[in-house]
Length: 344
Image (cartoon, rainbow, N blue to C red; front, side, top):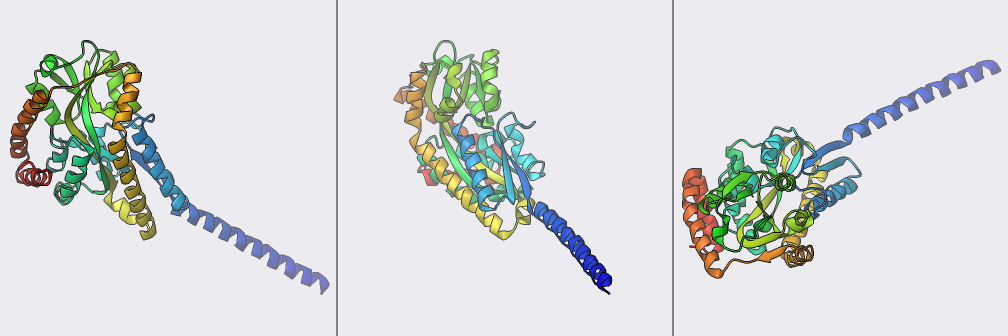
């Protein structure tokens, strides 16, 4: 009898161990299933403040979701995609998220790109006026063109100007015959009007392109030029405020909808924090970046007021051409932007 009791006890303990082990494996598998891993592509390189801000966004989401949404930020050159492809590869879920500069996707959308047109909104203040004004029409264009993406925040990257090697540009005529990096069709158009030769490429390609002599001049923001150490190759800057670029942080709509509601709420809250940090960068770092560039030996030149006025007139005349090319929705976006910015 005693032996039977021990046998029964042994069997019960053995079964309990099996059940506990199965439950442990089930819990572990369930935990793994709840962990979602995403990639977030950016054209910014890992030595820039813009990349660091995206990493801070991803870290905050990971922390607040207890690791159940794990976002990895992939900087310029890390993935086999160019910035001009980000909208499409997020839409088809090749990757899950991306920071999309509007100028890079001017071949895919038209109305949404209006804030980044030449001489439209070169400053942080103007970008923060025009981006909210065009939010609805941007979402409508993405939907009508079947881009399966959701914009979770938008922010401006102002004062896209000229940086180069060789003889410094000190007046508009100096752009003639120069090979100039651009990142939008509209910027390319303006370079042609100045007599230059536009060459489209992403920011990560600029330094090697200058070193190889592919280009002599490149357009980017003041803060980016300093953060990305363009001073290693560029010896001068020309502060013609060609345009202000705007960036949308986008996510694949279907994948975002699959997340728990609490996780989506955290993502949106941290996206708003990211937006506010980038607005602060746009409004407060330009002078410090210029000082840093000067200390690195970059000579900063400025156009005359008349040159800025003349170039602005050229750009404003071109807007109607861009709007006609884009169609009714782009014409509507232009009207909204002009009213918001007081150009009427």
